[in-house]
Image (cartoon, rainbow, N blue to C red):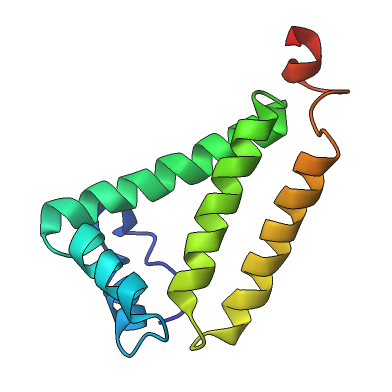
Length: 124
């Protein structure tokens, strides 16, 4: 399965997909960390799912409104870097997307995005 099961995502529904990506992972310590932190119990699966949803939502709001843009870009980079590491070498289709979003985050951060238009420009 390549994409998240959105119907049950916030109930930990995508964790089967995450678990399949940790099998024979090219970076065993990363796979063990994901298994121990996110997959060890149903409660942790649900908490991880909610953290992903809230993280992606907050990054989206930050970038659309230009509110705390540098923080949103750093969090977005961190999320995409983890998705990149999780996909490993198995899912090449996902890798290009994650690399592109990480590069976009770096470019936007380096160019001071949010300081001309957006709430950051008005506040700072």
